[in-house]
Length: 169
Image 1 (cartoon, rainbow, N blue to C red):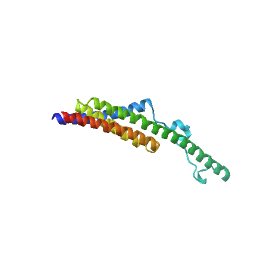
Image 2: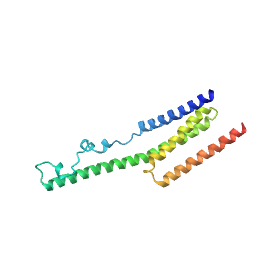
Image 3: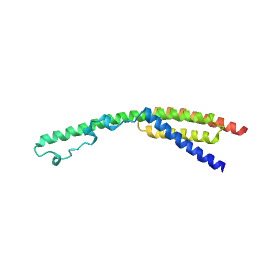
Image 4: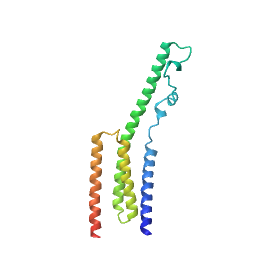
């Protein structure tokens, strides 16, 4: 029964710490909002997609100009938001990876309390995986490789130390 409770509490700690870190990042580094990059009319633009969408009193030239103008506004709006979102995802990747490594290091120092250590380590690993998924398209491959290399070295080194300690016990 004690082992089952340890597993349940370990999983609970992993989930709670993971969500807590995500909420903390969002609280202090909020995700870009589309409405901040586009005026209110661009949030729900009424597309002019064909001549039938134009007003009756417009000429064909005025209608074409209105359609082109609308396309340009929507494209510019989306491009600004997309650029900000990519920058956010790259920064999120770095921030979440750092927090993930910190959690893994904390877990190492809590080794004597197995369920807490396992829960904190799991939340750190899941946070790192989530960071890679979130920043995959927005982060330079060399940066992803460098961060992944550092994380792998830390995790492998800590695992070797843990295994040596457990072998002595």
